[in-house]
Image (cartoon, rainbow, N blue to C red; front, side, top):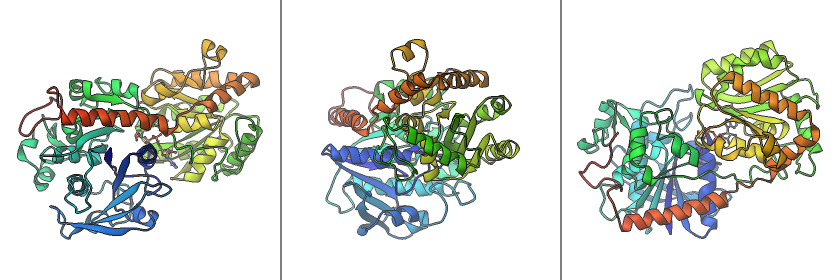
Length: 502
Ligand code: ADP
Ligand code: GLC
């Protein structure tokens, strides 16, 4: 089986969040299972710098590009996965992030940038780039690749398409003028195609046109078919539910293994947990908190956006100050959340540590040095930090939603008794419920033997990519089969025919 995996970020080339972790690991796991899979990304300066040796293997003339677009070939670092970088300096050679300026605003030409990327992916997928390779399936990820299934639907003899939703809340919405500038088929300006409440949605390109849809946990696959989580697309997703699969992400235990982690001062295993305590002291020192090994530290790492529920934590600050605990938070994102956290830190420097920014090494130290990992997300398609926390012996405290619900087993009576509990789970977006879960964690923390069982049960969990990759491979086969022998009308709409409602 030959697959082209299209993504807008991949660790260790360029990363803003979990999509990069997935795109850096899943292709490698599939390659290790002896299938050909190639990864394609835009050639941002960071990706070019981190990719190692690259050579130009093709030049394409594409609509929207003033100069020929070069395809640079190399390898995803630490893997045998072939990498293509789409090099259009006009679109990608600039400072800042993959989606935003250094000041944090979206690039004003994002529609043109990711349309160009999609066109390059299609040329390679159709074997028109002179690479002498044609994939059986193109695996697209999130809105940045949403136009790929749409553009491929216009091609006879195209590969099968799978579109994975990592986050339905980011939709790639643009104006009618931007839609017109892209010179896409005019009939795509319809609620049955790309139009979404008067704007163009790149995400709908994937949701409407892909042969199959997937998302990153079984629970989120159900949630997004409801108005509460569907971001206005629940009707479309309900319509396509027979072609929507949830597969939980995995963990790259080469990067996230406390026994071999080069980014933490003291490596440890389930048998040498006293060394975890040394990391805790290093963590307290890093955040200039009093170094008290006996005080439980609650950690959080994440993008500071509404999704992650940081506001719930902020609401509880007065309560938390009353309790024997410390809290450390690393993140970057919305200025008002950053400011509120800084303020809390400034007022209570012996209880709360805050670092605004993106810091890979500190994220590892927080996993290793904390006693509990907080993830009170309002929604969470999968979430990776709770999976990392399990392996680091840092029981996650999570809200029961999306991938959090699928990966953390609450430390209630029966689960504790049967030694199946791995963390703490609360139900509603409600600070009082979060506080009760924190209190349960504090109570259990005081019972050393029970706590150790909880920690060790978590550390034993196996979320390695091999399992998830096997599920993806099974799905790839099903999608290819379906594409070659369509059996019903639920497949992507044929040219000129409406296939779904919004
Ligand atoms: P999302 O993709 O919604 O941001 P995930 O839990 O899937 O959430 O993945 C987030 C990834 O990004 C994790 O690997 C996490 O450690 C990392 N991360 C997020 N914010 C930061 C930060 N400020 N510094 C370092 N790593 C971060
Ligand atoms: C998204 C989601 C996160 C998920 C990640 C990787 O960014 O917010 O929950 O883990 O994608 O799939």
